[in-house]
Length: 287
Image 1 (cartoon, rainbow, N blue to C red):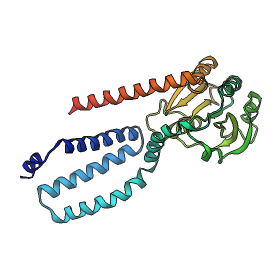
Image 2 (cartoon, rainbow, N blue to C red):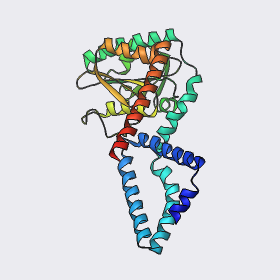
Image 3 (tube, rainbow, N blue to C red):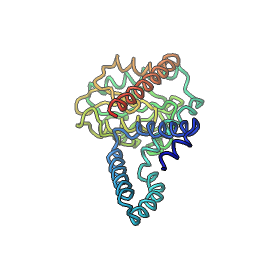
Image 4 (spheres, helix red, strand yellow):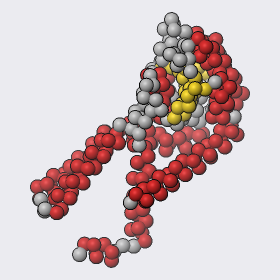
């Protein structure tokens, strides 16, 4: 009877409402993929689904009462349990409104790229570990405050001095702010929460580089202390084993040239839309 009543009252507006709710859950699933929260989420859904089926089939009133009250509690607990994932999702949605933030002139960014590439090349030869973060649209002030204020011009000599192993500032990240100045050194970065690492043997320095790229749109250049290899992280992805020439090309595309950055952003949007479409088609085939 309830099913027939549902069919009689089903309208175009109701279908649109159902579609939008399904779209919200489908989009939210992408933010939880590859994180530690996905296993917890699956376990919670499995327990709730089992309780719902048992209470409906066997008409268990006490279990149904517990389930109804548990859902109210979960409405408060979920934002607390999944706080890192929800924060990352909201930050990614809010990046569109951060396009109006002040950015360093293109000439300043170009000079910054030159100095960073020059410093990274020497750091790689000497096998001195380094983390250099380049701020883009997302404000990194909360991470700048964790380090030692510098507020200096970005030069290769300054970066080499900071990451010299016997200095007090080498153990941490150097952050370049939106104005193109070296804002701080020895800053603490968040570690990645993803389980899908390109290499399970990645050290803390590389995990921190991935972490800052997951919570912001910043670029992070990382130099391995063990191998001297150069890498760069962006949008939660690590591009490893770069030479200085390739590093300069990537930094120019993502940080230096305004026109190339705008074209790349459109390309990324199309790529992300294609990934969502392919995932949707795969789910339909499995169903």
